[in-house]
Length: 73
Length: 73
Image (tube, rainbow over all chains, first blue to last red; front, side, top):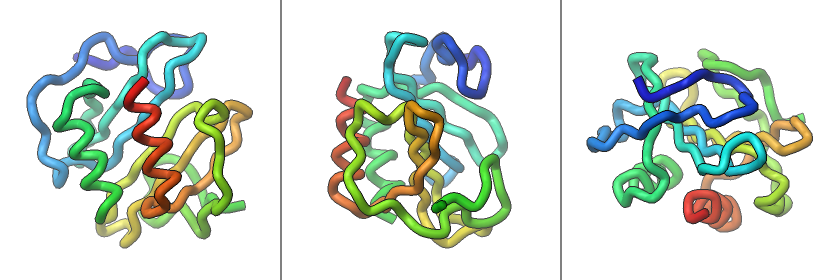
């Protein structure tokens, strides 16, 4: 899987990012973590309605659209 | 405070939203939760670098700008 661990970790949590589109309606929440001393990457972790957690690519246009869609509801 | 509880709750987590601007550099992460059976509101919860959690207004332009800024890094 793509996720190393959860919680407020002292290192990066995403090893890889999910590349295929995920429909917004199957997403429960999305967590955006800033880069910082713990990790040089911005990390976007989506929790799906079935409980799975997936790392998404912050720069992918569909990821940005999903975030916009959640905010616009 | 503005936060009822943390975790994957079965109800809304934000009682009120913080209205003043928070500089992106003081934010550690931002969690966007979709509306659903547990809560009719979209909820945006920022964790600050000092560990505090604040609820933000999803429709506020500055909140949307902060999210864009995090993604664009």
